[in-house]
Length: 176
Image (cartoon, rainbow, N blue to C red; front, side, top):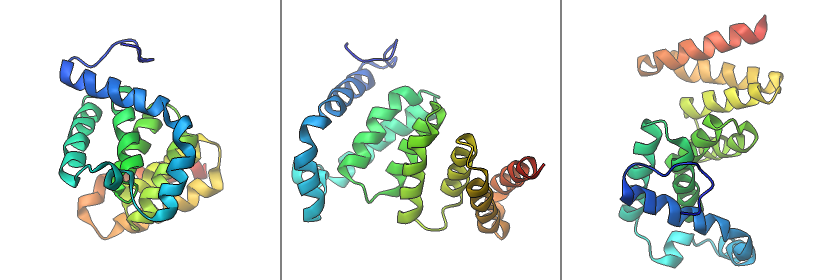
């Protein structure tokens, strides 16, 4: 395998997927003109290549499993391919942002969390992650605004109690 990571995923089928998608990502600079014209046409890469939503969801499942295992470096090529193929799906941009954030790349993750919020306004988890990335980048005022927004999004929803607590703690540290 020619990937840049030190070890492949344990599952050989997953390793093959990661390798194939990593190679596709490496070839992207050669396809930029075509991808720009595709975006202008309003069609997605998945539509052009005939990839069904079910196939994308299956690939999302593989990437999600890798994230749950903490293998963000292996999940990243999958997540980025998903975003490229179906940029209108917020789960894909959230996963890609999470992978980048976990690999200490907040500058790139910010863009994907912002995309998630554009696609799914009111997404408290994406707002919180965006705030974390902005804070990591030293953009304290913007982080403060996003964390306040996160707290508001979580305030009335018991399901987001832990996220509310995390955002409140981050904000308190920021205000010190």
